[in-house]
Amino acid sequence: MNLEEFKVYVRHSFHFLIVEYGFIEVPAPKRKFINKFMVCYSTDVTWIGIEGIHHGFDIDVRLASTDLSLMKYPSYCLDDLLLIRDPQFKKVTAQNIDTRDIQKRQIDQYAEVLKILADDVLRGDFESFPLLAKAIDDRKSHKK
Image (cartoon, rainbow, N blue to C red; front, side, top):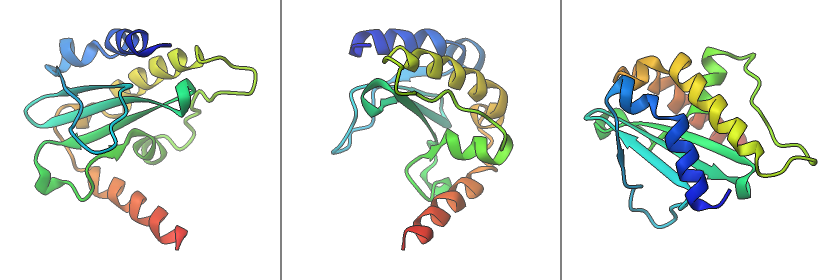
């Protein structure tokens, strides 16, 4: 998918954020290295970023509170939340024979699991964030 196709597809798949949770689309954060393949949504308390990665063969969904005092890291990865809440979750992953169209299946899958397994976060409940921070800390300690 090109940039415009990616954004249109993400907006369609994640439209429930606007309709059911009151999110609005917001610009990507201003940082040194921002991927232009990113669509962001926010409420007064919750920020969600959907990013196309690995040259169109994967996506990343980022979660954050707009209250920075609740954040040890700038954002948390939906993958970490899925490992905690559904360890048997099978992510759609690109195989050698796949084309970049695999990203559409990944976007649809992540929209579905975000709604089901992160409803609390979407509603502004961040009790899971310390566990997500620990997942990052654990990865960092294993790299040493």
